[in-house]
Amino acid sequence: MGGVERFLKAWDINMNPKQGRLCCGLLCMKKPIMVSRPLPITGPGWLALPLNMRIYNMIHKHASYYLQHLKHDLPAGLVVFLVALPLCLGIALASGAPLFSGLIAGMVGGLVVSWLSGSQLCVSGPAAGLTVIVLGAIQTLGSFQALLVACIVAGIMQLALGYLRAGIIGAFFPAAVIEGMLAAIGLILIIKQIPHATGYDSSYEGDESYMQETAQSSFLELFSAFNGISYGAVIISSVALLLLIVWGTPTLKRLPVLKSIPGPLVAVIWGVAYQLFSAHFAPEWAVSAKHLVNLPVSASPRDFINYLSFPDSSYLVHLYNPKLYVTAATIAIIASLETLLSLEATDKLDPLKRLTPTNRELKAQGVGNILSGLIGGLPITAVIVRSAANINAGGKTRIACFCHGLLLLLSIVFLADYLNTIPLACLSAILLHTGYKLANPRLFKHFYHKGMNQFLPFTMTVIAILSTDLLVGMAIGMVIGLFFVIKANYHAAITLIQDGRHLTLMFNKDVSFLNKALLRKLILHIPANSSVVLDASKARFIDYDIMEILTNFLATAPDDNIDIKVVDLYGKEKMLKHQSIVIKN
Image 1 (cartoon, helix red, strand yellow):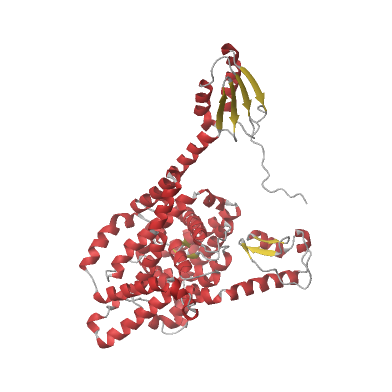
Image 2 (spheres, rainbow, N blue to C red):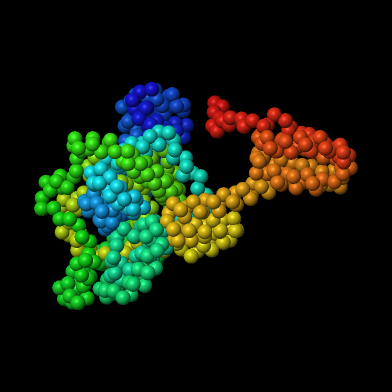
């Protein structure tokens, strides 16, 4: 296997030559790959193509796909940038870290992780979910520099988790729990953005925080917002929200001129125009400086390098501190879990319904955290709020996320003065609109009609996340979802069919110790002087506990004059290896 093949395999990039499609992060392109001769129909035939032809085909395919969606991705990237900018600053502030470290993490997430990731829509950057951990780590380890070392070590751990294929954990979260997480995040956005929309900006980090701070202070802050109303902020946010609603109506979407312009971009333009107009002609109706984007201004591009923190010999001293590895492991585990949850949620929201390879995502996040730590940035994860804003703004490919990172870089170097004229109220309106889409009342109605086995995990996940935090809430939702899975398995695994004195005890699928109580109940329903067919032909595995009950039943059945015929029962106590993929030709 050559170097290119090893690289493709390591990053879960593969070729499906039978369908003539290139799969990169499970993004399967619809159009055939352009080649000078037909592609071979077997894997070895594809690898037998000249290396330059393989690379050309890959680049050509990706280039045409990204160019096709450029008109959607560029405006979406601008919107994500505008949403991410105050969050990066606020999270750094709440973490007790230099403000610039949040921007560095956002740039790494956009410029680097977007290309290493298998997701086309997931946005990575500093996460409010790590705020408490980072703040505690700086205090425990004694310096921000020690945190950067812990971030590098955490990235190495995440990279190892990716190669160990730990990303499969994300696939075990039920759809109802994932949808509940999205709805809860939508409600958190609404609760947290209303104060910002009224001009009561007490914290940025709470905008997408899942930590305990959100549950305890959100409603109090919501009521406090009405005591600190800024009329200019209310006008900006109200009109911006109205524009977003109107912009999404089918009538405007049919207009060729307007359908290519995203509503969030219009909301930002409105906010800036209002602020400039009111500042000149009605200063009392303008918003104050503290309600505008506040970005560090660089005197020259050279100042950007001065903001970075590169490793030096003092970094090695921190490696002898055992607490550093505890901190790194904590960051790696929490960041990986939040990434996998955000990834599952983003795939749910993706209008093109693409799937993301989770192991590749862990590798990408690992590389991102290593790089972020090396140049002075905060730890990063995949973040659902910015990802949802990306999708809501019409993003289609990773170009949107890359553009958001590029704009963060350019804004620091060249555009800070201009971006500092953007009112936070119009950004709040964008997040309010995104929150409503995530927590649409029709979603609750939809799960109610699906039945209690879907509605209860969904609603309990929402309530648990709002009451605690993301990870605890998801754990509670998982427990409730698991209860319904066990309940369904309990009732569906075994069936007793009675026709007079003739009965059939049928195992409908694999049977585990969880079905012991049901099996005992059914055996007690078998009357004396009857004939029973014990049919296990549909089961591939039968637990030892179940076999013990059946063996006892076979031994005692003659005492009640029960005649038993056994069908394909024995030899299924061992779990056989299952071949997931079978290739016949």
